[in-house]
Each structure stands twice: as structure tokens, then as C-alpha cells.
Amino acid sequence: MTLILGVKIPNRLSTSPIFQDIISKYGCMIRTRIGLHNNCATSCAGHGIIILEIVDGSEVVPLKKALQAIDGITIDSMHL
Image (cartoon, rainbow, N blue to C red):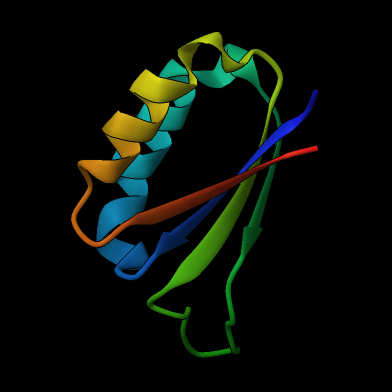
């Protein structure tokens, strides 16, 4: 079974370093990471969506709790 997490980050510019630290800590369980945000030549969007494909779901609860501790982040998941 494949687990996909969708993470919406409303304050991407201020929360990205915290987000990166957390997913680095759980990096062995993440097979794929895709970041989606709008940008233009002069600035980056203040919000974004990250899609994570989880290989080993045994530690997904601590990962989700750590991510949810970041102000404003919302997470949704699907099992395929």
C-alpha cells in the first residue's frame, strides 16, 4: 500500500527551514517529495503544497505530529 501526504504551507518563506528540518529527520521513509508553488521572476509565492510519498508508514504519526506543530500547516493523506 502507498501512503501519500499532501501538506499545505501558508507561510512558505518563514516555515520552509522548519519544514525541511522535519522531513530531513524522517527522510528515510520518504520516497518522493514534490513541491508546488507559484513564482515569477521577481518573487516567490508565500504559500505552497508539498506532496510526500511515504515508503514506511510505521513512523508516519510522529512525522504528521511534527509537521502539524508548524503554525498554519494542514495535512491530508490518501492510501492507494
